[in-house]
Amino acid sequence: MPDLVPALPPGYRAAPATAHDISAIHRLVSACERELHGRVRTDPGAIAAVFARPGLIPELDTLLIHDQAGRPAARAWVNRRSEVDVHPRHRGRGLGTALLDWTEARARQAGSGQIVQTVPDDDTHAVALLRSRGYEPMVTEWLLEFAMPDEPAVPEPPAGVTVRPFRSGDEHAAHQLIEDAFDEWQQRRESYSEWAQHTVEHPTFAPAMSALAFSGTQLVGAALSLDLPESGDGYIEEVAVHRDHRNQGIARLLLRHVFRAFHRQGRRTCTLATHSDTGALALYLRVGMTVRHSSTVYRKSLRPAQ
Image (cartoon, rainbow, N blue to C red; front, side, top):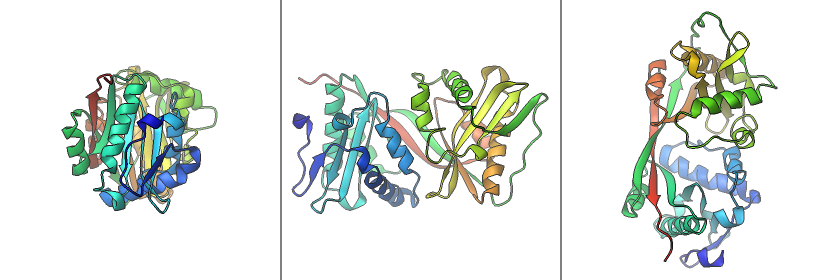
């Protein structure tokens, strides 16, 4: 580990992050999001999920930089993909470059042949840095929103289809459905424990604002939601429909059920994220969602260290 600690400007020190740093990291990431988009999207549960990623070794795969007063100034982690955040007050001092160097070095050390990082398209400085280092665009991601000044209408379900909120005991069936549906584009299946970290075991999971669709007794669709108090949004973490039941309006039906449930809880916007590999953007636009902002997933091939 010591040989990978990056050289930093005077007054800064780096150390691996631990689960005890979750709140501090969340404040750092929130400051970055507020600076860029005027609002916070990430919640502490999303930070905690990083430490639970299969194969991630916090003492090797995370780095937290503090300033002279001991306040977090920047952070990074790498485990199949990477993230780098620099607090707005500490930008322009080379911390982002130092952490990018570190993520690449750690990825090589771990035997990775490539490194992947997602950057908001309007973070022009970060985009320019990645492009200057040989990163190439791979996938476009969009955060979409649905404005709800009035209670959304819910269409009638297709014949034989019923919809109800998520209940305790639905967890494993929902995981199976979602992983089967996502097999068409995802690179690997998530184990139940990994999947649950950002869905049904997430601290902000909202079962009453999550909807399941059944054809008879068969689960054929799911929309799982998080209630994010800091953003003020309802957030749909995952939407999936069984392959044999697509093109029947089930996804639209599920979304409308979720929108209405969040509206009745006082939320006036609902958001979800999707990317270009899923081919789902057109569906969400037809439902009435609009793009709030976009990001690009960049990839770089790594040569072994000489």
